[in-house]
Length: 175
Image (cartoon, rainbow, N blue to C red; front, side):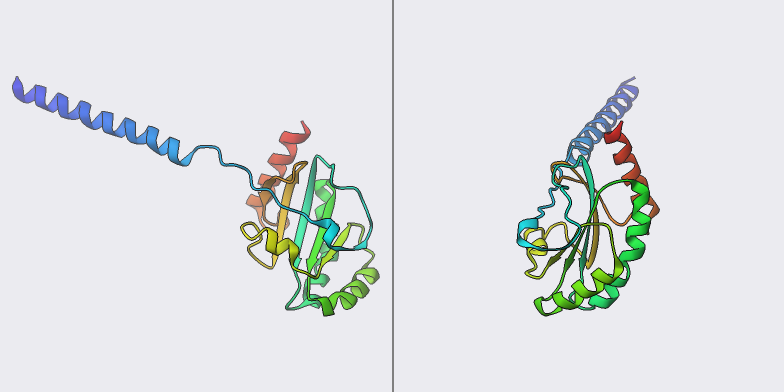
């Protein structure tokens, strides 16, 4: 009888440990994170084309390109990007980070492309410097809400899971 009691007590103890571990796991890993905010210092950047008021949009897409190493390569992809991103039916801003001596060349290329999106050139690396925790690579695409909180990060044109995340966020805000 005593042996059964010890086994039952051990089982209850183990079950209690498992349940408490699950609650602790949930508290540690499943809690709501503060949304990251993308700081967009448009006043400190050169607007190259198409001035639009996007500051007050409910949702917008910001496409950031670091073109310092190869401006030609980076800019050539913009036409295709703009054509394909239209399917999301959201205002899109393109920000190109470049060296100061490359700005004239970039403006020349952009004017010949006739892109519709507002395009800013950041020759002072302001965007990258004030957003070090979110700008991680040479090409970043963000879905932002009206407060510039990042709802999704990644290129929805090249990654299906990112595309699904964009669609989910857009649907939840628009409906």
